[in-house]
Image (cartoon, rainbow, N blue to C red):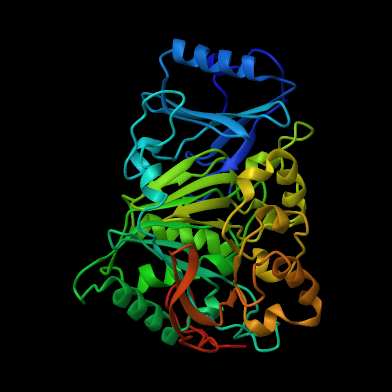
Length: 450
């Protein structure tokens, strides 16, 4: 039984009964608690003064602040004491504090490429390098989608995969599509593409600075599993970052367990970061700011469960800054999350130049897209899938905000971009590689297609 230490108790407000189990990083937590399971204490009816007093109390017991950030939405702090790592944040709009015992993450100063904690007023000093400098290259990688916008034994109508090439030629990968989109032909195409955009010769490793997974659905993890298992000597994966809920509290797809198994087996030294609201991660010329993670939704009414009905609401929301532009990564964000973040995250934090259309354009986000007010959009679905009768009204929510209806790109082909001269410029367009699935599973074993 994982328990909260008495000396970490919060004085003030109303502490919820019980702890929320926010899930492990790499351990298999499908059968119960894992050693790297993160625990969350929720305090309601509190204020900023009590929150600051709590941080002072922790520092008085030997904790040291290693990261601190102050945004219009949250006041947050990561504290470290020997092997203990705590992350605390105060949500201004609700007068709530969440304190997370993070049993798996690398401390933020060690996770980011560069970070110098100078004073409570300072955010990472590398932030300036991401604003106005050289833009990273952003690729919406082409995947095969069911031509009838449905599912079959060899096709699917969802999945997404993005690749970011940093200024130092390392990559940041986002999600990775479904097993149905990772046939041998498709996988070979991914592998060749990664070598080509990094100009990495055979025999040399492709360096992946980080792999970010928005949530624990199977159509967002397959490429990582297949690439690492098929080409185990070709990649150096330095970091992974995500925030999957505990499998026994709110199960995701079993493919997420295969992902964790793969990372344990092929990347035993990878740095891990469980993403939480208010965190900032800087990698070369890209900065990521966390605007929402699953524990933002928990309620004191029942700390034993994730309260939102749709598992897609566990998707982490990141805002990315590079060069002179910003991208909002929504994953599969749904309307329940939208209602929460529209209340807790002020409008000024949402504004971005580019938006990744949420959940393959399967649901409305009529409040969030106008807040983001993007000039450009990337839709992780085929052109046909975005324009079916059931999706047209949802797509209209996005198109109505763009500076031009032509400023949207679909994932049935590969498109590369760079922020340049105040615009989101296309730098590459090429056909998708691979078609219907060939029956090779996530472990690389050929299965009979039924």
